[in-house]
Image (cartoon, rainbow, N blue to C red; front, side, top):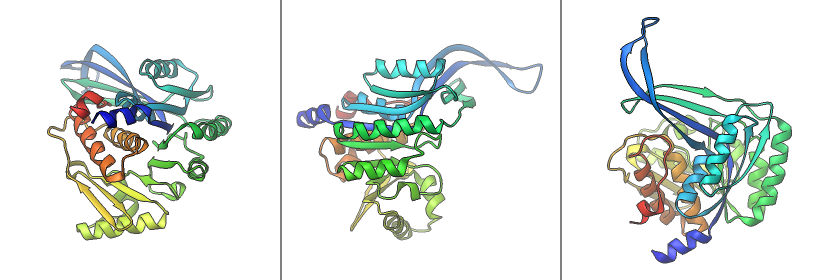
Length: 309
């Protein structure tokens, strides 16, 4: 175990994608508004956490790995708050500021641990800022072992095809957390990590395990992927690669909140691959880490103490 921990310390992961600030307002609801039939939340506590690709980066940092985060934020208060959070967590950040947009913020209002409302603020970054980010990406490749592209559909990965091509040309593994029903932009990636509903959106429904395997392998071949990892919620996760299917049942003892679990899976997977582990073994650690974070509220991380105890 100590040998693995030392390898993780030396592992370097480059994370690129859509970052966001997750804001939480906690309160009590004791009455209905006289103005409309809605609950009145009296806010007693607030919290801020790094979300999206920034949550992937903070998961890697929490496990003891070295991580560099490349993204676009607005030139605003939320962007400054996000950058401050990341620096405090020891994450090397290269955040391009775009004065034309607002930093993506997801504001959640909760009472008695239940979410009452979520409000989103978001825009797509400008082409000029994205072009600059692509140059930074290429310059950062030589200093990393593994690349993670975290796509939340907010526009930061408009040049994803060029990023994959550049990274693969330098012999780097590229892991992608995909978004949407078109996987063409991710062609040639090392690994895609869709969840069950995301995979169904692209591949269609299946009635049996054999049909799932067939659909997964067809999709893997179609987009020239080395492997495909489908996270299946309470059914665990399944890895598909040439001539091999590996399934891991879920490690979660108690599921409290699944938000951010996909970030933890790809972060742990990328870090373990950067530390020299093979995919099925890296997947085993990812499964354990996901089991830890779903028992926590909101976008959370698994610490190295929790994972290795």
